[in-house]
Length: 231
Image (cartoon, rainbow, N blue to C red; front, top):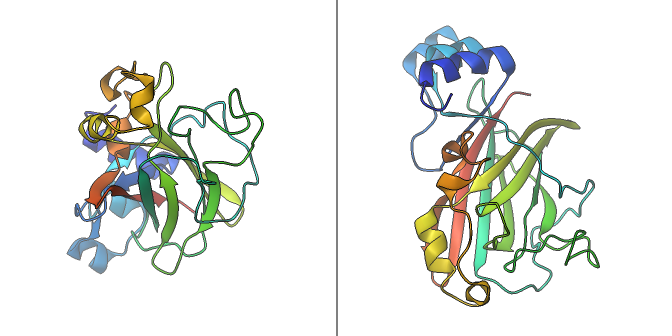
């Protein structure tokens, strides 16, 4: 499934899939053929509109609907600062979608989710919704997620357009970057994590196409990705 780009492109036209690529990686563009013949699912399938297809992934057990509309989702919890810049585009045209609702949730630096387990007393930290701007961007201020048993480091995401869920997925980090971050407190208090990307059962199902592009900004990080969806 991951190794066959032609099959992935064909499946996009059939099932209305999700395309994702790190910003700045020229992973999607309108070619001259698309401009002359018109963009649409067929153009994506033919390669005239070139995108990297990533599969939908499970929302997992920790989703809570109707979270707060806000940019900063940390609620003062410690961790390495992380700015998420998530862009939503139309997979048929690669044009930005304005006013899409992007819903993210992840564990804190010590591996706890709000509303569950150790975080059951608080239902809102590391959760939030943002609307995309005219360029398709939704921006969140958070911290680099921690880890918990059996999973690699990840962030959950849902995209809603006009009240409909058009994508459910997970976003991932380079193991190299995670290793660097986890040398710091509070992450270092937990010891070595048990699961890396290559041994994560969810990541193996297409997760390499949902890797965030990461750049360092002082002591903080910025994570970017473009998510193409079908309306």
